[in-house]
Length: 445
Image (cartoon, rainbow, N blue to C red; front, side, top):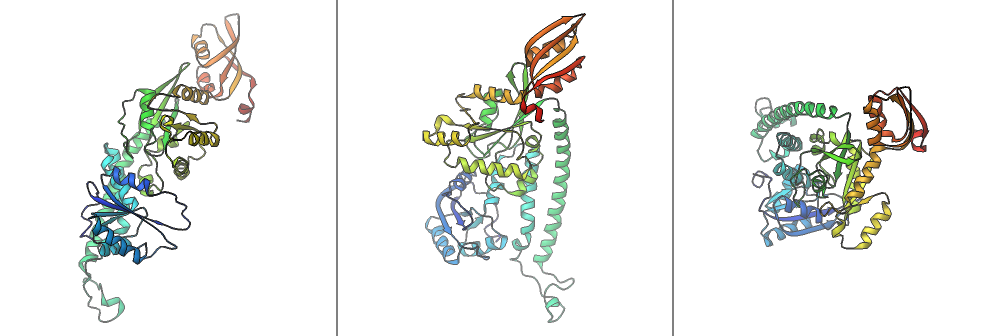
């Protein structure tokens, strides 16, 4: 295996993509996503190879006959690497490389490679390195199986034939050394990340008085472009998968005196490796602690519905499936078929249609978010001293004044106010707050 796996990178390499489709896997995908991933990693895709299989071959994942065909294609197209759209075991990779005689990567390794090239900050670099080591650790045994174990001195018994005390072969010795090194490095990385996580959690806790909105969505859906359009954030944007890995938070002025925090997160993906979700848990804290999620969808993609489902699956995995969410259909300016957009609007009638690139629909998005920010309207009767201008300013900025009565140095104001603004009003400590009339939604809360 070591002959072909000096590096897991695929930049500038000629790649053949392979997908084995099981009966339970309902994939209409023609390797479009894996192609985008491979090209994003810098590979040159020279061929695509799909096979429907009834069950996984324990030795080579796909059937032996198909492996032979694949080996022929490798020679014909002068390929340097074969990338599977499936997760392979170390043994399967080893057997495939024996037959095909080029490097074989699986889907998770490719994604980890892309993340490694995108990581810029210390935190994201540590997160990616940890994910790579945790992916590699259980594979160490088969990666070192090319080294012969020396026969033991225990005679002909099964226990003593190989690996007696003090006589274990170089493969087993190297395996133990590698495991200790990897374990030590994993522990060190987790310690460093824990310290960074503590600082991030303190930052998030420090924002408790502010309304927090998080942009989520499939990778390359346009989240960073939208963050720039709404907040002039100047965040790096490029038309490629996982262009940014680091969370960025900016202030967003909604109008009517409303100021919120808007955060951009890493893009989600179908079958995102569990090691990455675990390693980037601190980064995903922004999602977990958000008051509102804006789920950005590339509605111009033919796989938009599948991408929505993939994002929902990741949200469920990080226990955010019940979080308040507003669906945002982005890139409406480049939708090829009007019928596709109409179908999406029919399926998701509450979604907001925008183009982050051209600015189309951003005002409607702001109004929709402002409505969520305010919450269900409540008619309040607020009493305070006439000299307390802070309360009156707050009510004029965030509410709709119905009536004002002044008497004996105090003022009584009837005002329609969003339920989410009540905590802010209470912090100003008015003399009395009476709920005159609550909407049906607010009564249930």
